[in-house]
Length: 173
Image 1 (cartoon, rainbow, N blue to C red):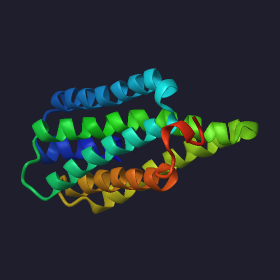
Image 2 (image 1 turned 120 degrees about the vertical axis):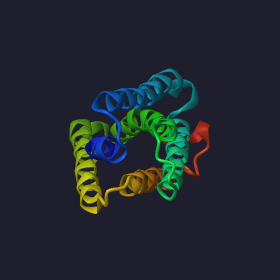
Image 3 (image 1 turned 60 degrees about the vertical axis):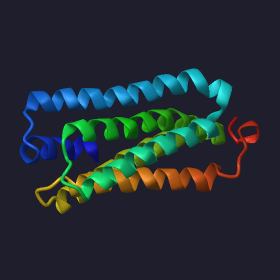
């Protein structure tokens, strides 16, 4: 959703130049890179369920920040970039661990499971991007609210799937 709609919001609506947008985008992606790096270093010690819990909490926190920004006039990069970087940091913790969880549960059909998971991500992004584009009203609000909704949904999904698991007894640890 962010990838498909962020340039539309940051450049013409918020008035940043394409060069500034690319710098903001790079800073936001550093959040994702940091999350993936942290996930690779901590998953064996902490377990998949714990990494998903931390990632969902981070993504949810960043999403809530964006959701709050949607209802203010505070749409500058000084608030947007850190909030979105937190969302992406959480996603960096979630993505590799969700993939590992899916593959471990369906090891005998790992290729099919991986394909289904990737297709689901892409389809969700395409549908979400289309919906946000159709809801575009000349403000950042639809984008911010969509990211907030997706981030909070990830947090709720993690709680439903792994909320009962202790780190030592998680089904994929």
